[in-house]
Length: 191
Ligand SMILES: Cc1cc2nc3c(=O)[nH]c(=O)nc-3n(C[C@H](O)[C@H](O)[C@H](O)COP(=O)(O)O)c2cc1C
Ligand code: SF4
Image 1: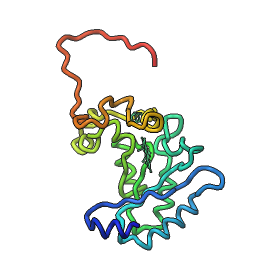
Image 2: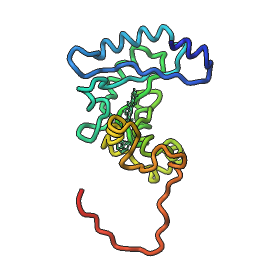
Image 3: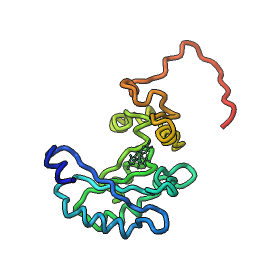
Image 4: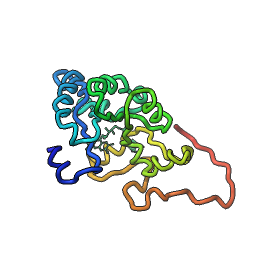
């Protein structure tokens, strides 16, 4: 299938594969099996550009698929390194709760991965890559891993985001709050 897609679109059309990494459930695919799958895919390494992994591919391990603030940030560097080391010739991508440009840069420089993917951070701010590249980190609208986007897809079939009310609209990345004309004291109550 990968070879057919490469044959149809050629290069430099980027093809990234996302086979299971660790399902996180007994009897599911674990790291060892994931590595065996990657070995089979590596036979066609000429036909794709990148490998990443699905973490927590079962309904019962959704908390691993969409890691949130109940657990550590960027929880998979060691697993990613383990899979990557078995196939050093293939570019590997980190994914999973890397919501900050500094964390992402670290993953690139400390040997975790060659590329870092954006999942939810791109839903919250489609301009994340540009803002990071321009050093305008303070302008990034951050993903808070509330996972409302997932619920909106599953329950309503349409993407919504707690931190980006215009997600999916053509001008979503141009949104900026209007400049205030008069200052006020504001009290925020609650958490
Ligand atoms: C709304 C939504 C839809 C997703 N759909 C898919 C999908 O169809 N296939 C897939 O492999 N991962 C899917 N994911 C998972 C992401 O690709 C990614 O693995 C996950 O969000 C963790 O990365 P992040 O922390 O950068 O968001 C989805 C995630 C979200 C939030
Ligand atoms: S709804 Fe928005 S802020 Fe919440 S997890 Fe999804 S992308 Fe992040």
